[in-house]
Length: 311
Image (cartoon, rainbow, N blue to C red; front, side, top):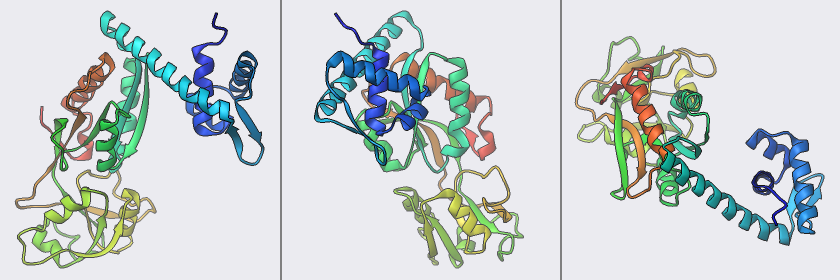
């Protein structure tokens, strides 16, 4: 007869994966005393120590604890799968949902999408992951995430993309830049000026491809993998940059004014959409998330980032 609960296993897995009761408390939004009590009850039930308590370094799994953690993770996954099956049969939207998002626009899109979705579907347990494009591909193939909000950047054939919004490239520059007083620029205009490149996998290839066919080439003087750092470097006069999402503020994170100009001419826009594994079984939660995001785009609730709905 079982004398432990799935909830106790969930607490145990959270502590085992984070190495700290405090971090586990933040991750699953449960009080530290409740988690500590659950761990003690499991240790009493199994008759073994699961953790070695080290004040300076948190908790370390014992050898027995490592073996039980691996099994507990399997048990919880299988229990979640049963809930998914039951939800599909009953038509309810519930269970876990793991959503990836391209980190270049996650701050502008993901929190609002998640808040609205969780308010509508309160029985879904959503986890978010900010990733670059290569990490998204890998996570989908390993089933670490169920789907992702991203761009149509070098999409492999084994993944399925549903385009939702078209986003043309834009130029960002400080107000003292020699081109800042214009209503728009071309790639030819930009090619001779210092550039701050947003240097993320595949994203940087796209930005540089915009210069193909020009006599002038990009003059890359600075590189960064962080969107906020890029905007601050632009605001401080290190050069212009290119992006596909419009900042919600006309100032950089450190308070300097930044001009955003459309890029004229034949420049390839990116499409923002939802990416899933080609043959993945789609739970009710996955289908509901796809429909919810498509509804937001159709209603114009994401138009502030500068895109045009494809629906």
